[in-house]
Every structure is written in C-alpha cells, then in structure tokens.
Image (cartoon, rainbow, N blue to C red; front, side, top):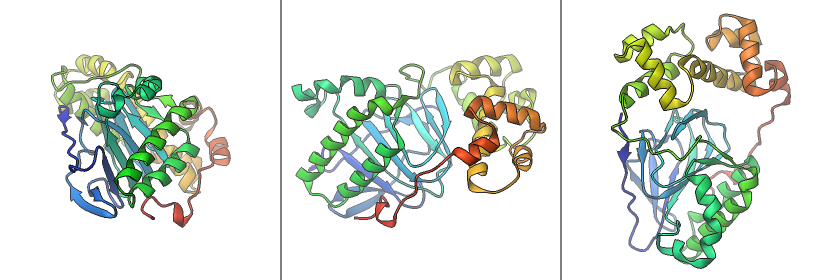
Length: 308
C-alpha cells in the first residue's frame, strides 16, 4: 500500500474544505454551503497525504490512527492536527462520528502570507509531526466545527481563524505524535509488506502470533521483517503487538465489567503476570487502578457534532 496523493477540491467560493461523517468514515460528506452537503469518496481509510493541513475531530468511535511513523489507539473525543504532506489514515472507524477541516494557512499559501499569521510557526512545526490536543480543547473545537455547518462564507472563515488561534494557544496541552517530520513515500523499501504485517497484527492481535508466521504471510524473511518493521514503525514486532493488545484491553476495562483475567486472555495474553506488567508499563497503572481512575468526558445531546 503506497501513499495515495489526494487532491483537495473546494467550491469556487470556499478556501477550505469541511468534512463530516455521522455513521462511518466510509460515508463522508463535504460542505457546499450553509447546511448544504454532498457525499464524496473520502481517503481517510487508506494511507494518503495531501498538501492541505488537516484538523480531524473524532466525536465517537474506536480504531487505530496511523500518522507518519506513529501508530496509536483512537480515544474520543480526539482532536488531531496533521501537517501538509504528512501520510496518515484511520483504521476501524466503522461506527463513528466526526468532522475534519482541510485548509492552507502555512506561510507560503494565500492567507498564510499575512504577517499576523507568522506567530503560527510553532503550530505548523507541531503539525509537521502530527499533534494531538487535550480533551477540553477537543470538545470546544468540536462544537465550533459544528457551527461551521450553518455559517455563511465570511463567518466560516472567521470561525476557522478562531479555531486556529485556539490551537496555537492549546499547544501547551498538545503532544506531537511522530518522532520527527515524516514523509514516507510509496517507494520506501518493503512498505507494502510492512503495512500488510501491521494489518495482520491488528486484525489477529488476540490470537497466538509468531514472528516467523507473520514473515511468511507477508512474503519476507524473519530478519527482513524485523529490520524494516522497526524502521517503519519505530518499534519491534513484539512491542507493536503488545501495544495493540493493551489498547484493546484499555477499551474493555472502560466499557465492560469483565474480569481483568478474562480481558487479558481475550486480547491475547496467555500469562496474567505478563499482562499486568505490560499494562503498567504502558498505562502507568495496573489494570484495576486504570479502570478505577480513568474518566471519559460525557457529551450532552446538543454537543453532538451534527447539531446546529
């Protein structure tokens, strides 16, 4: 799977594109005017990049985000800023809701050339590695993206500028996702096979998996798989598999009352002590402590991204 180069098209009277989905990322709509929408074929579920900066708000859903060399579990409400030409895709957002805005405000682009926007250089630096913002800001900006749905052209632009200003102010609560600015290309050695290995690990994380079997399934030697997997993802095959299992365990701990021992078995850990050790290393708490302490923001009906 090489990097698909997406071309962002906007109506003649709009300088940025607003996207929205209510049920699945495969069913994306784009705004053509106040409360006017049309379906488009989105690229969110494939490895892609585009010249626009993208701000994605995920209101609900579960899945995995891939941004440059970063791989992590989606944890709504989630707000992620993705820089121009930074490859990314979202996996598993079949039952989800969210919005995205794609725009060009970098120094060399249109409005970005305004001297007042030179103060945003730090924001673009964070975006080049992917930035994820705090939950409180995610909720606020999610509401602002909802208001964009019904706004006229001038108000839409003013609201976007306010969103960008809030992002810049919120950098103190933001974390960058990639170790460095990342421009993975379609010609990267073994990129397709490593992507196949990643998909296999995510799809079958709960099963007993051996590196030799994974290597055979994707058509690589064990040594080549291990070497390029680490180069591509920044972690070993085993570390990635453990992360995938722990991510699923976190969701089960929060969404069910199942016993910790049962969750450990269901996500692929055959040894409870190893599960507890790996979980504490990843979450900074034992599974029971995590379940007791972790709190997720709740949303009122009027905070839905689709409400006017």
